[in-house]
Length: 115
Length: 238
Image (tube, rainbow over all chains, first blue to last red; front, top):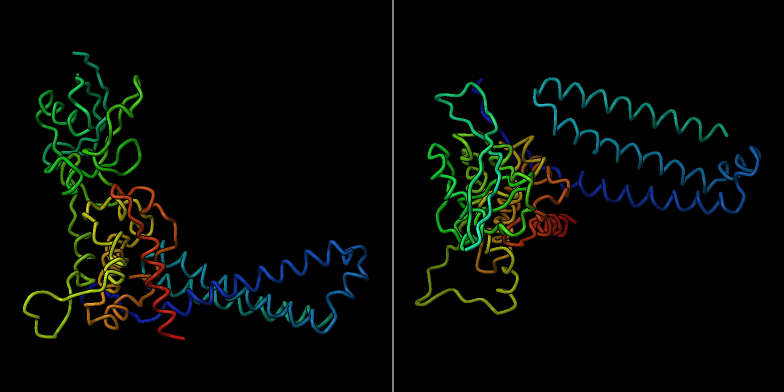
């Protein structure tokens, strides 16, 4: 194969947009948690569990975890794209990152619904 | 006439003679008539005529004498000698990230390749009118801060994303020029231009580091232009 530099994959906008949207989602969630802590939700293990196990909070925490993983996917992939040049190694790192993040999301979901 | 001795530390590399680059300590006497760094460098050439650097207009228009001055990219012809403190050598290096041809002269091929890739000319297939293609003053206003770029490469060579992927990332100078034509109401290839940039490398390697704004000798803002390109892409897609 001729070693030519190839660009023009015609994607990237969605990732860039998703990174911003998930950032906003995480900021809002952080704000909710900060307010809850200020109001004493973290006073004891029982109150903290009660706060996190409510339906709306479960929903919010799950959305937060998905946002975090998606945000991390775009960010970590950017690092690989910036610094790792050989395509094979880059693909392997992309795959590992994706596998780890999907695993973390599943693990987090399991924890959220175990509360 | 008052004179002043300026100390320099200059990156030297002649591929025909040197195995690797080295820093030369050299001094030159300047007088009150020498106002800019370039004036001192021209005098330096009389001290050591083997020193190589590019220069042409000496007034910040041609962009030939872009250098890394005390760790910061800029034009030698715009750098005030009065701004350099006494007793500290002025460190001159070639623009970072581009291959060095000799001393302070870099190979700009990659930079101009990226510039050419955005098709830096008006694309309009309508037959040209008798006099000129007109624009409203408001439409023309949008081109301010874009058309003034002199392609000195200070911005692109200060951009870490361009250092890592100069062959794939268009770089701030190229993207500023790209937006100059995307924003031009007389241009008819807006969609193709956006298609051409919608790529994880060509446009989206910009991580808004903003070194480009910091070093632009013309005071331009490539980051804002890049943001406007992304904004147009979002508006096109949603």
